Image 1 (spheres, rainbow, N blue to C red):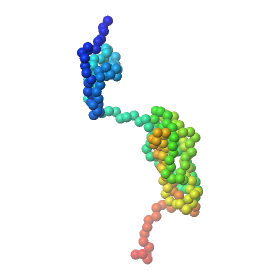
Image 2 (image 1 turned 180 degrees about the vertical axis):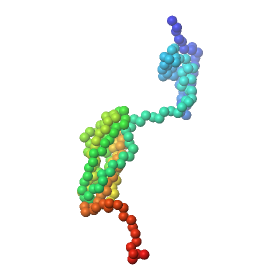
Image 3 (image 1 turned 90 degrees about the horizontal axis):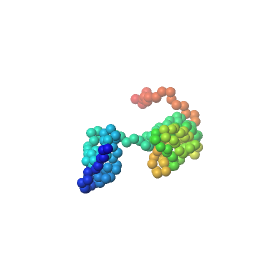
Image 4 (image 1 turned 90 degrees about the vertical axis):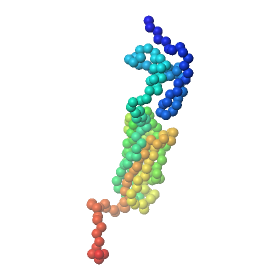
Length: 191
């Protein structure tokens, strides 16, 4: 039976340069962290093999980090036209793109007229939950024009999970949207 032994010479700590940081690694720690595969190293590796594996420069760049956060890009939703002094609501999907559960702990709206109603605060991994977003302009009956408030949803650590931009046009009650764009032209008496 073959018995593999490690070198018996006393070896001091090795200095490794990983990502620009100098790390001092004791040989026993390096050996404990290194897990040889049966195809490449059928025997326990020597300290030199561990050192060469850890200290050798990579030929390819590091792979991109796998996202563990949900999709937190600004997402825009258009509610269309709303009459001044009225309210509108829409169901908006929130998708958890992570491999772990997320919990919405805090909601911040950029306008007091914007509110959100959630049936649940937790979203399972790779699942979609619908929330109801409501714009209530009853307290501001004279406001007309474009409105784009933002809704931010945070977890318990204060990390932003979602950013929603809700667009709408607030119009008067008798307002009719023009069918085509109107071009300005001087009248005969203005020439």
